[in-house]
Image (cartoon, rainbow, N blue to C red; front, side, top):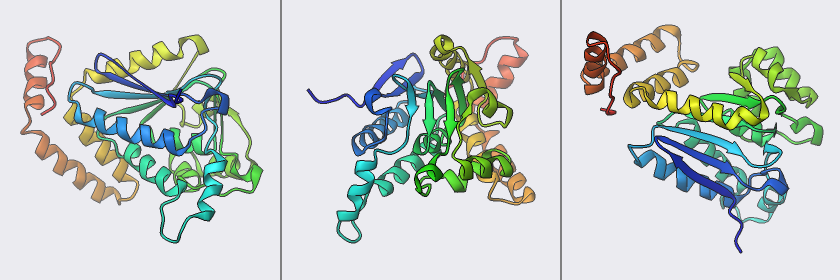
Length: 261
């Protein structure tokens, strides 16, 4: 029987993707990347799905790349896409996904697993979860954002500490530095992540998409350019049905019913 390496389910407006290679600590291989890409395409095209949860099964969220597949790239012909090419392609899709993405870290999160978590918009974690870059422990170089993205998400000195020592920190410690937004008891993580996703799913999809686009682009812009980008998005948003619905709902003292356009 073929291993179901990625579980996909929908709960109302929430799509949940669960890495499902628990014996391999949910290490990423080409099969996982293929499934992840396919399901992200389905979710993006379904207007009824408003938010995404990415989590893992077993004791790990993701322990990184399956090294057998990384090493297999050395035997490929020149110009042929290898594992790292595919990983960065899929990570890019996730990082720029048009809907909010929540990473729910249920356990060990290291190396490529940490890079995967950093693609999410919001990170929540179980109390027992640990996070580490860990590449330095094995003489390996980060290949999907470890050195490039981590210093954009937490203070530079802490990013350097994680990169250079390879140490694991607890979810509670990483919450102090801002990478983790919420920490929950292990048994409560799934329900807490779902409740958060459902809360966000009630917001205007088009407003969230535009907020995400501006916020993610802001670190590469000057303050004035980022403000101008925000104003362009605002002018576009003023013409949407969701903007009008939000104002009506506020005036009528009722919950808004957003359509996404």
